[in-house]
Length: 445
Image: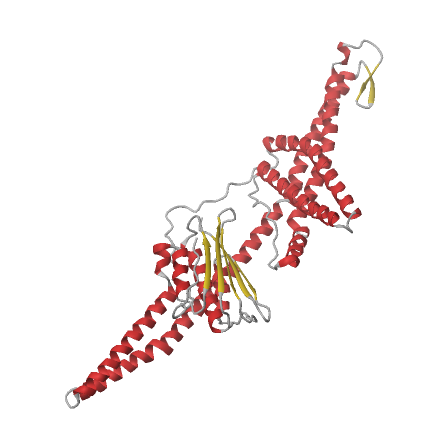
């Protein structure tokens, strides 16, 4: 943990590190195991067993949810009703999650597990939007529909199993009944015909059970398997967005480096060359003037070296690799033009790319705060959240607000860099302030 309130000379420019070269492929690409056939004997037997359980489980789940829904609607005018309805939404999500996991365990379709939806908005409105996104989640409702159908099939399974037991018992009726009629389930047969009737009804009940097992597999393939296709489509869309963000971030970084070299270091080095040329012409005729020119060239050379160091630091802060994000942010805060309160709590390293992205997002935010927001102080909070697999950071200043993402600007560079790593960046900067930026980046696995 670090806590500091420093001020110094120049804020470090924000820029992405040079991405490492991809590791060579040294073996075959692993593939997901093929799903089991829904018609295999083991799958059919497992489906029948599952249906027998779901017949009871579904009844319990929907009874509880129905009671919560009725009570929530009846007491909606008070806070309790809203809490009960919230429980209904997340109760549906929990039931859908378990149903998806059950089907995946039975058939091995390769389904990613359902994930709760989250809104990009903040505050209470963001919370309500999150609940609404979860309520309209298509994958959740597909799984709930599957649970409803499986529950109905489960009741039919128990009826078929009862018929099977009655049929087997009736087939042996002549052993303990000598005369009269024998009832098998709801049918009555003469005792002489019960063995044949019992065998036929037993075969019918077995056929029904097998048919229910096969039907369960077909319905699972129709309702549950498309969840995987939808999630893969979303993953492909996210990958395309990340690729575009990476390309855009690279273009912005190249443009920034070219601009810094063209507007800063290059003119200074040209000036050094011209000054040394003038000194060379005067060194014999006017040694004192030549010495003064050489001194000016020496001063300009040191300034150029300083600018090159700052430019290199903007490409990649070496302290990140040597001492980690905590030390790098402490050094960054010490160079800030405004006081910075730094609060970093990281139990483990989050990975080079994640730490670099968060570092440069914070660097750009502090630079903007010093240049544009008229802020007198800033606060930086960084947390490692290994349970969520993300590195989270928040930068807030007390400036005038009104910050906007402008194409080609620093905030645009932050957004593209974070998006390229599969993370999220949220800017909140109302007129009058304060301005806050939250970034969340997946950690290295």
